[in-house]
Image (cartoon, rainbow, N blue to C red):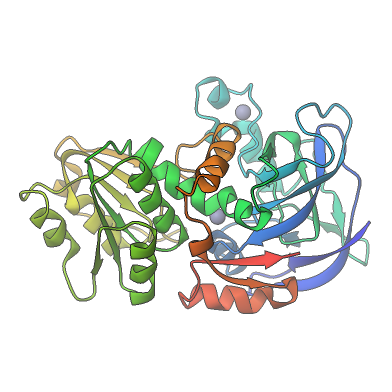
Length: 367
Ligand SMILES: [Zn+2]
Ligand SMILES: [Zn+2]
């Protein structure tokens, strides 16, 4: 079958929108007709060479759509199901899956590095017959994708698919960063440094968990406005005011119970550590580009803090996506407020330029 897809051919920051072909799903695989796909900063990093990826490849790892066809031995999903794609389709039987850390699944990470499906080959070809590789086992910047059954998570059908797409990366990572990794409790104080889509979702997780003080920090006034809209009780522009002092002022000088970093800079990493209280929890969700070293005075790591770095918010997507869908439908999780722009796949490069300039909380490709 032919389809339109955004293909990364060179790490020069631009995608090529092309007609390519996609096969039928093989054993344990699912063909999904993508309804919406979010533009994530990790795609941008891959486009600019900060993440490794076999090329050419179809990027996108935050998608939702409808199951069009299932391969042999698929048991959990059926044609017509509405699914959110998880980029953590863990195998369930390796050392890490057995140890309760499926995000670290050994089988999955080996496959992702090769840009292929579990069976060992890709399912897409460009017009000249060349293989086109998969990205994060999702590849949602395309009209269709083939994903492992384990990565196709059914959600209720009254949950709009464009908003469903956001669950696939940013919302799950941020929400889980606060609720699971950060273990935010009622009446806790929380700071979130970096108010892009992941930070906004962490603010929402903290709010839903019952935090009474939620401080959103950024250097972009627009992002601080978004932070207020989704539940920050206070916002700080760290270009103008010291977030560490601000956090301590609210907490009798101790620092917050839970500090969450979602910006990926040396400064914000240090501010996150220093604004947490001794014995508190520190969650790193952001990442610096590969090869960039972070410098910290050792005292910032002291004080019996629990410090964790997590990529998917310590979540279990198959358990959590349906729960997040319910939170949205109950009016508790705000997703409409996080969508800054909807666009056609033809405008995807403009969308990534806007993301780079900090104009988007989330931009969505709508098919
Ligand atoms: Zn595994
Ligand atoms: Zn992402």
